Structures are given as C-alpha cells and as structure tokens.
Image 1 (spheres, rainbow, N blue to C red):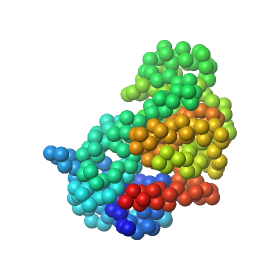
Image 2 (tube, rainbow, N blue to C red):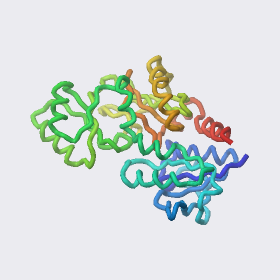
Image 3 (cartoon, rainbow, N blue to C red):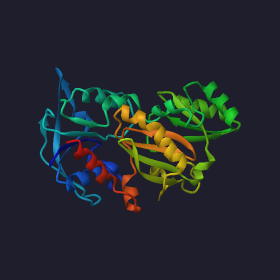
Image 4 (cartoon, rainbow, N blue to C red):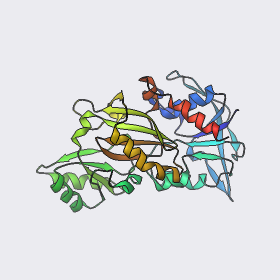
Length: 311
C-alpha cells in the first residue's frame, strides 16, 4: 500500500533534523514507500468551498544540511491526498486558527492528524485545564493584581505565555523588592492572558514528555534541566533521558484518554512534573527521535502502522 501524505509544516529547510519529530515522520513514511509532499500553511487557499494548495514532492535524507530535495510545485485540491499532517509549530495565533478552519473544508476522504477543529479547541496550555485534579494550582489571567496575590500564596511561581513553545518566554519569579514591576513588565509584553503556576521543585528530577498515540502512551522522555536553568525543554538545554512510566503517569494517561479519543487527537505529547500534568501538546508534539536514539520504541514506525491500518 502506498499512501499520499502531505505535511503542512514550517519550511523543511528551517528544521534541525537531529531532534525533529516531523522529520522523523517524513523519514519513516518514505521508508515505507509512501509518497510524501511538503507545503507551508501560507500556501493554503479556500475558494467557494474548495481548498487548494501549492505542494512539492519531498525526498528526505538523514544528513543535516543536506536533508531534503523538493520537486516542482504543483496545485492540488487534495482529492488524491490520503493524509494531511498538521505539523507547523506554534505560536498558536490567529494565523494558526485560520488554517484549522480552512482544513475543515478538505474532501471527506482526507484524514487530518490531529483533527483541526479539536486542535483549535485544545491549544497547548488550555486543554489541560479540564483536568484540574491532575494539575498544580493554576491561574490564567492578564491582571497583575491576580498574579501578585497568587505569588503571595505560593512564594515561588512560574509565568508562561499561553500560546508559546519550547519554553520560550517562561520566567520564574520569587519575592523581591521589584516584583510588582516585574509582573507588570511581563504582562505588558503579552497579547493574551498568561498561565501562572507554583514552581515545582520536583523539576530538578526531570519533566517527562509522554507521547500518546491513539489514546495510549507509547514512549517517555525525561528532560533534566541544565545546570543553572529551571526550564527542562530540550530547546533551552534540557538533557534527555529515556524513562519508564510511573504509576501516577499511567493514571494521568488513563484519565485523559477518553477526552483525547473523543476529540480525535491522535498524536499528543503530555508533560508531567512529579505527579502533576502541566501541559497537553496537540499542535506539534516532539521527542520521538530522542526516545528512539536512547534505545526506546520506534514511534514513527508505530505511527505509520496505525495510519496504514485505517486503510
């Protein structure tokens, strides 16, 4: 069986392939004999109920800096495409939201992973709020007084942009003589409400990224913060370690499974610190190359086996 697979993604020339999940999915799809195509979201066009895009045939090689060849672009109406993988990275802004609306008009035979309507309703740090019993205490607000009251209670807090990625823009804040100014300056730079949570000391032991495929956990990467850094994201120097699921990790996965299945969120990465669920990543979850390179499961192979079984 040969499938036609279109990757909606940031331009492939921008990828650092050694740790990129989208590239890993491209490699495995090509290895399995599927035809893969590349396009960036700005190529999507809607007109009178019909969606078209300029797409390019794609060939990938696992060789940094020489990792792709693109064929000549041509226009498609997606009728010959079996899968669209929506893999462009956040920020989750109005551009992102608009593309989810456009993708809903694709022909019925095209399967989009993840479901665009569900992605729109479950951006990175908001779906998790429906599982408050699994989360640390959380505030979402753009009101400085609310943030300062939260800090008075918890003393040591973390402020996060609501729609960012990779740890970008996250700060840790403790009591100091200029705390009012720091909070107001942070908020001033935001277009949307921010997420505020207590700092979790357990993060020194790692922040787990658990990959979930069709509701089931299939791999776990523990990310240890670098010396002098409280963030564990790989993009800011986090050290990846292969990890097993703890009993509390399994309980978290079981608790969110029905919602993920109901929303048709097939490929998801959740973040767990200690016993707390902190994020559910549905836009462009990463970590699968590191898991495989460290001796863990081959998640791209599992992903495409799942996709092929749909046909």
